[in-house]
Length: 420
Image 1 (cartoon, rainbow, N blue to C red):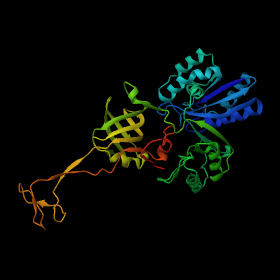
Image 2 (image 1 turned 90 degrees about the vertical axis):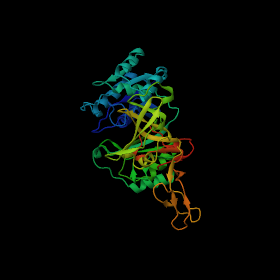
Image 3 (image 1 turned 60 degrees about the horizontal axis):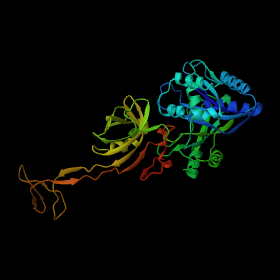
């Protein structure tokens, strides 16, 4: 029989990773129970949820086994052995969903990726369809477990995750940075967001105590194996490729289709810049846009690095389309599109027609004169300001990119200003 298994919330800030735990389960299934069809799926959920652990990612896979009860026992054993159950914020859940029920979870999954879902909603779905499940402690992981099974991926990418040997967990990772840049130079854009050239950092190697050595992101299995053979690091213990909604903008809600915007949601909103952008302590840059919802604050926080320089070039009257998550009534910018650049004018002293130099004031109420040529003019002239920004898309660098945010290299859009 074929059963979709969904698992979530087994990790914590102190260690473990749900993908690693799922990999152990898959190995046990294929050793003792049957087989797993295709690649497992890594589904990132709403990135603004305050209850999330680290990346808010849940895992699902399709198991073909003879006995579902034995499958449940294997999943239970591994969760009990490896999940960070001692952490008060770790509340795992696992579901075992028949194929005909899995297709009915699409709407629930979409809500979990874009909206706020309660545990009661997940338990209602489980009860309605008599879904076998495992609930540990508060069981909030049941939300992600169901969503990982039900998510429909019209767009997807792949991630090859290499895991460390257990005795190395929690120690500093050893890897050759240059090899990751060489790989990116050779394989980009078929691989992407693995390094940040502008900020000289490798972004696919985590700095947490989790089992992951690195996670290579790409568009095909073939290119990921090429990348694996090019990067140099400490030996890896095991590896797994996941189909994922990374880099898809699956979390973004088109604000044109909603009546209001709310915190803990991610939007694409068009508006007109209301005032000059300004910096606050810490290097964060803020500006307001006028929208159909009223004025909305937008922020480019310090980790977005050079993206802030783009934001600083905006002027009142510019029309922009912003992408990002709303927290504390502020859009945390992931990228923006300059739709229209406002025409700005300044009044300046006139230019001498003979020598091309700026004239000087001839005295209060006496107009202007060129000291060299003795030419005169009565009034200042109105000149158009040459803007340093143009219409098009601008994005944060890879080191500041959220898992779900789609990089411009994956977008079929005109005038892409890519930070690689």
